[in-house]
Image 1: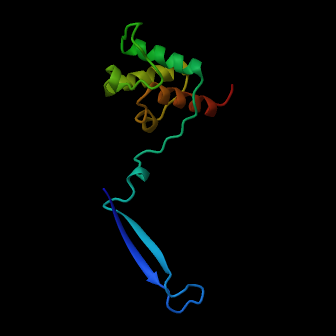
Image 2 (image 1 turned 60 degrees about the vertical axis):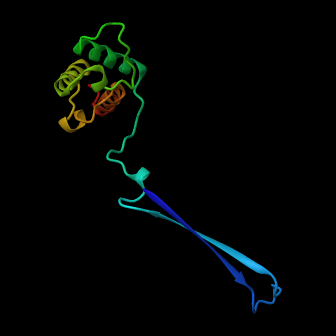
Image 3 (image 1 turned 90 degrees about the horizontal axis):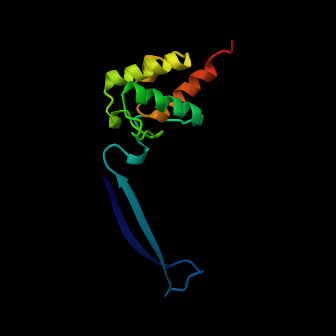
Length: 136
């Protein structure tokens, strides 16, 4: 929670030749204080960098997610679709990652797979893995 305090101070010139004795100068002071853990918008539990995967990669991820979760063809899947919002539990997410590894012939580290929560994050991770993969 933020707190704001303000004060106003007026000074009357006594010895400065540039100000006549009846002129005043006003100085306003404002201080801001943040309680508890500091400035809240700078706190983040996770730093994210998006590399914007190719549209065909996103489409393929959508296709695999749809198949793994047995979603109907008319179910809307977008890059922003969260796995949890479309009915995937943690086991489903593991199965989706395994299907993606098989389809794209990549290996996803367990730590990375735990950070995948949306179609876009999965597609971005695949693109990153494919860029690391040496060409045969």
